[in-house]
Image 1 (tube, helix red, strand yellow):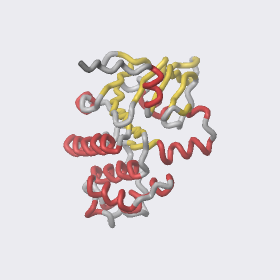
Image 2: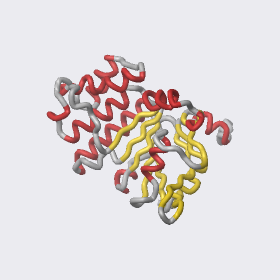
Image 3: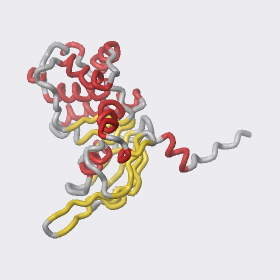
Length: 236
């Protein structure tokens, strides 16, 4: 009789985590004194796993995402990307992390207007030193962009532009994708299609996905959910 494997220890989970936060605290100064936006937030995200980050407006969702991306410092606690504490990285190392290891997708598409779809898709990969024409072609096919490679952003619909933004992110082979309301500017049907592509592409690439969304319907399609209430993790 084969005995079941023992559950992984905390150190084993940490070793294979793509993204981990430990007791994150963030305060903002106001005229009435400091306000805690995050109050001891901890979670672990493994390769290929998707996690929806939900909560009311002002609950700390975007702040948490920005700290995970290294765009804002935490006042206490730690963020580890593939086991590396991002607070201990130099400015050059932090920039390299955002170019390659971390991929960012926002509600605003942030495409480069002067570049066509093909060059927008290649842009991040070139910065990260991971440019691979075959991978770009495969992503364009997967995302339904193969016939649009010579078009410019202004010639695309909102859903097409967001698919380009997702492809640009994934072309750099990130270990972690941070997406802040990526379907917020899209109608429901287009948003569902874009989220399908994002979830599938991240899963296939083994990239962890942290998805900020206000939609409980979209959140339910992720592997797990982290709900924030007044800066703390709370039941959804």
